[in-house]
Image (cartoon, rainbow, N blue to C red; front, side, top):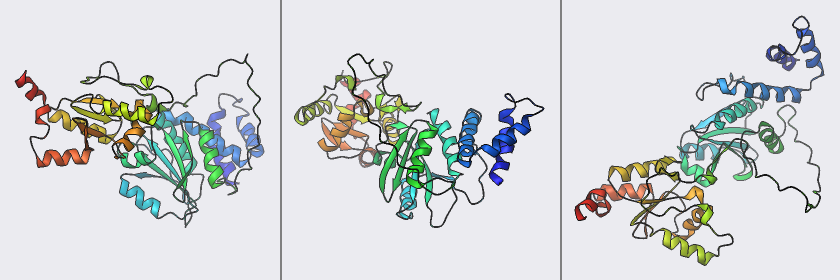
Length: 354
C-alpha cells in the first residue's frame, strides 16, 4: 500500500547505521511488511523529532499533503474568535500556545505539524489545528490561563476537554486521538484500564518533583537579582499555605500600595512575559515614571486574587496610590488626554524636589 512505499523512502536512511548495507533494503521491506500503520505513524513522529533541531521556526516542517490538515497560525484575537465560531460542535480544536523565546516550542511545532498531516481535511471539519503566539495574542492566552509554553489545549463545542504541557509526542497524540479518534481508522482508542495504586509505604522514597517535559515553566518564574526595583520584592515562597480570603485581601491591599505607582505584570521589567506587559513597561520608561512591580507569574494566589479584589480580569494592572488605574489601554488613554499624567511620580520630578 501507499503508506508502506512512503515508509520505505523515509525509513531507509534511518536504517543505514543499523543494517548491513548489502541487505538493508531487504530488511526494510521485511519491517515494513510487519509494521502496522499506527507503528508507521509513530515512526514518522520520531523521525520528525530527530530533525527538529535542524529546522528553523519559520521553515515549513513538512510539505503539506493534498487533502490533509495543516496547522493554521492565528494572528489576533478576532482571527481566533471568527475561526472558533465557524467550527461545528463536533469538531475538535487543537489550540497550540507557543513563544519564540522558548526552545521547546520548536520541537512541539514539529510534532503538531507532523500529527496534523495524518488527519484528512474534511468539510465540515472534524479536527482543526491552531497555532498562537502566547505573547502576541495575549488576550486569548489570558482566557486559557497560559502560564507555561508549549501548551496544547483541546477544545470541543467551546469547552476545554484536555490540556497538555511539554514536548511529549506520545501524550499529545494520545490526547488528540482520545477526543478526535485515530487518524488512520477514525475510531477512538479503547477506554483506559483502571489501575489501583497501592497504598504508600512509610519506607517508600519521596517522589521527585513533577517534570514539565522541557516546558518553560513560567509559573515558577521569579524576578532576577539584577532587575531594578522600587518596591519590596515578593515571591511565591512568601505565600503562606492555607491563607484565608481575608488574609489574602489584606495582603493585596498592602501590595497595591507598596510603591506610589505599582505595576502588576507577567514577568519583570527586564524580562516581560507577554506583549501587553512589555508595552506597559516601555510606556512607563518613556515617561520616566518611577514604579514598583510585582511578577504575578510567581504567585498564583495574588494573580487570581487581584482579579476579584479590583474587579479587573486581565493583566497588566497599574495602581497609583493604591487605586487601580487600569490596564494598557487605560494607561494609553490617560497619557493621551493628559501629557502630565503621572508627572509627579517621574524621576525628573523627584530629582527636583530632592
